[in-house]
Image (cartoon, rainbow, N blue to C red):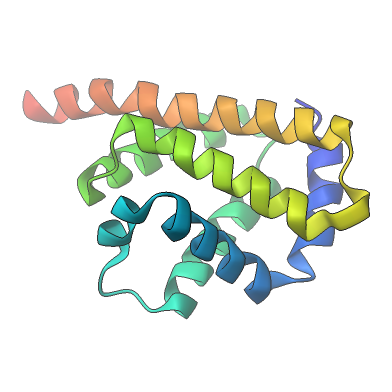
Length: 141
């Protein structure tokens, strides 16, 4: 995973913070209306803040394998509690990349597409993969 490329790209994207989050949720709800139920009771600003805070924290810690593994496992478990099903990770990734592509404009390249696709596949697979092990562990305590 090319963490330097991801960070440079993300820096460009975060200059458009609120529009980025707003556009992400607009696309998500248009393409996958069932996801609206996962966010009921949250304002647009709260949803955007949660998304951007999670991405900023992840970008800051991409090189720390222990942090990534521990936090993605916990994040996956929390999302399971919110009602996120495994197939929804694909929906989220599709929309996240579409939002990044659109937000980057002419700066978006095939190299960025590949880097973000790889990063999201790694992140989402760790979140999904770790949930059953974590949930089973808690069930036996």
